Amino acid sequence: MQSIEKIVTGTANALAVAGLSVLLILATFTLFDGLLRALANYPLDIVREIGDLVAANCGACCLPITLLHGNNIALRAFEKILPAKGVELLGTFPAEGQSYIVMVAGVGSSARASSAAIELIKFLTGPVALPVIKKRGMERG
Image 1: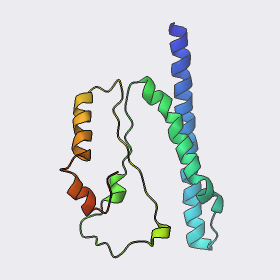
Image 2: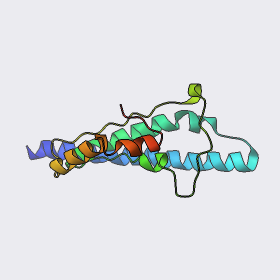
Image 3: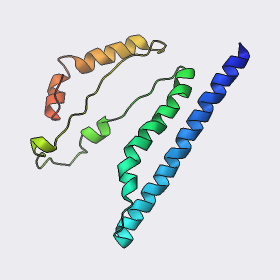
Image 4: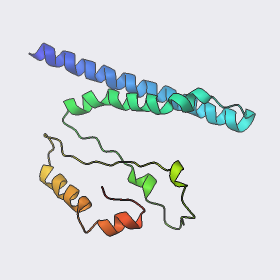
């Protein structure tokens, strides 16, 4: 039984290392892309074309080790949605240029503070949070 656990842990660690290594390579190419755009007006188009796909796969490589240790993964999208103080919204994109980001919440079966997480989800989806959601230009589904 311990040999199976060793194999699973080793495989999860290897996937995490591979994912993070590929992510570092993507970061290096992104740096080169920015430098080439700024200095030579010669972008590396491949970086923008496959960057999201590579980043998603690298994130997926880290899932097994996270789940193996019973941890949770948090996606932090609010920094990109809520504007910084002193920033004023000047306008919006036309409807055909807009897209929606669907946010979901859940509690892992092995979460240590599941009751607190459930209460947070209830609060964020409840009527108290609705004015803030609307004020920030978001919609509740």
